[in-house]
Image (tube, rainbow, N blue to C red):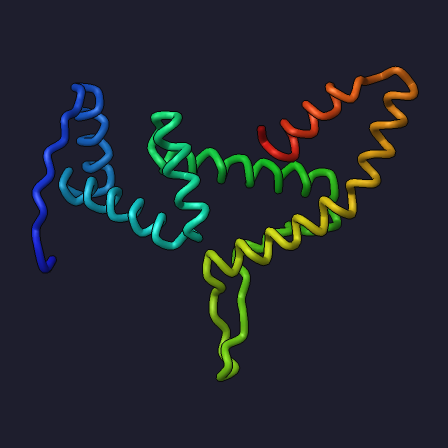
Length: 166
């Protein structure tokens, strides 16, 4: 039982109300239970993220007038699509997921790393990867330019779209 009730009022369109009622019914919950679980889930998700990521998500959410949950869904879809494409190209490489990274505790047990620890590890890994491939990409760009296949602006744009998601 909760320690304290907080009463909220939602203004919904008829379509939103119908959608929420259907979703609650499908999950075997009341509308209040559904809304509470979603709102609390989003708050807990933001609390688990490294602060810099949570702040960026909130900033993007406000600028784009989209809920944070929609942004997270899109980032996850991009991530899974990237991994699926990687696996299709490099079949023997296995699925390179580091998202569920375990660390050793001092007492010898294992624990799931925190979001911040994972972020720091992956940021370092990606930086090393980008630095390794920077020379290869530069050579590829120069070869394509020398052959008259693509301008520097075209290569920069494609690189930014694919690798950086801009």
